[in-house]
Length: 384
Image (cartoon, rainbow, N blue to C red; front, side, top):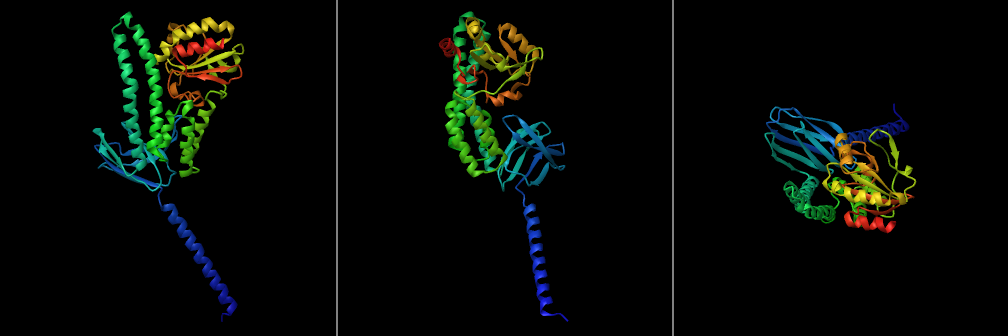
């Protein structure tokens, strides 16, 4: 026969079990709710799977494979994911890669034909739509401001007429000027069109310019309010910090890169340099090559007075690099990891395009940056 105390204990036990069971069921239910889903149909796709990767660091070009999404014989695929909002890439057998900017709750659908990848369409993600809009604007701006000038230079060079040299030099200066305008246009687009979309993150790859730092700080602050604690938020903040550190008045980080013989040369080892020009360039960069002449003149004139150049090549082909050094008479310190834009130091110096130049004093403080042609000449002359 149960007494009152036993009955009360039983009720407490039942209540406790109900609470625990409810918590367990709720926990399981929560885990089963996907952050986002990806589905679609690709006609004539034979591979049987697509690969999903996370763009962990767009500036350092680091990604990580998340896994495979099975594709049936009819080209259908679908999978739910419990992953953090961010930027991902779908790889269709290396034939087509699609970058997706994904926020919580989105159901992305992809349709197309492997026989004609131009038919591929993405829906269900407002952030991916913004990224596509940005990319379309980027290509249009690049064509209008930069590629059009490059084409004119190409035509003049093909004529092989010495009388064209002055015009080529003029157009070369315009190309560099317009590339800066192009990057400014991209930042204006992010500021005015993209809000706090996850798609803001991949645009940080091309953030540049001292004058743009206040704007980018505000973009980063608003993004953090909307997306606190996300990995992409930390990466955006990191990029802004790097831009501030590499602005005029900032102090450069040490460089320790190999020369043509594999011997490491430390930037700070150029102790006699009252001023050092850190020159990021490459053999395949026409504006860089055109500036070789003025660099050689300045180096010859002011080296004995304490002017040094530390040339960092973003080449991948060693022969091309060495040939350019010889042809352009780059007799100063030349280093390269032969990793192209994957050279880690490009991120440390926020180098998004070539040529990129930093004039630093003996303490590593940046006194000027990204000066070209006559502006560069006048600056070096004023320092000596």
